[in-house]
Image 1 (cartoon, rainbow, N blue to C red):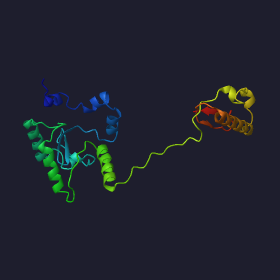
Image 2: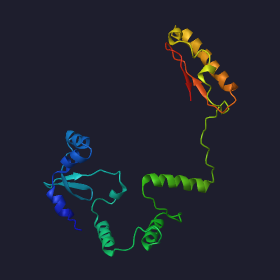
Image 3: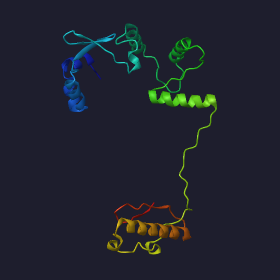
Image 4: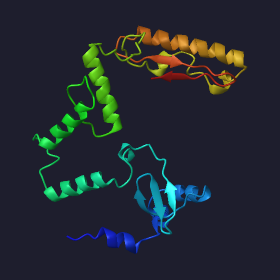
Length: 220
């Protein structure tokens, strides 16, 4: 298996926006062209980006922690190259590699008062872990999740023949809004009475009359 990244990038130089429009989100290249940010950056160093003509652009991107030391920092580049050359057994699940302990030791030296380090893979995992550690440290109980209590015992839905007024013809129900609301109230009372008198397990019934519309009964 062979892979030549420099040759691949050189063969497709200047095609970034076309490839992005064809295979990714076409709106992003369109937006960048509209606001004048459609530059072809070929190199990044420190706080600057450089295009093919050698023009430098100050990069104010701060959303990613990896740019805290700037782009292409020589010490970081050497550390990455050394890690690749060593071929050590990293990223193992059932092992304790010294590199993680060494990094934790360095971090704790810059954070007095802390004794342990817990590494996370993402910001979401870091927030979740922080909440768990806070609960463990404060011993505060986890509040219960809110529930919606049912005002009726579990009963089966009554059949349509048990609900008066439902069998009425629709054209007889469609009257004025006030009449519709009165009919809807009667249907609601009838449904609740039928559910309450049923001897088999059932459901909660809700009725929501709407203004200037035929009353409806919803069994859920």
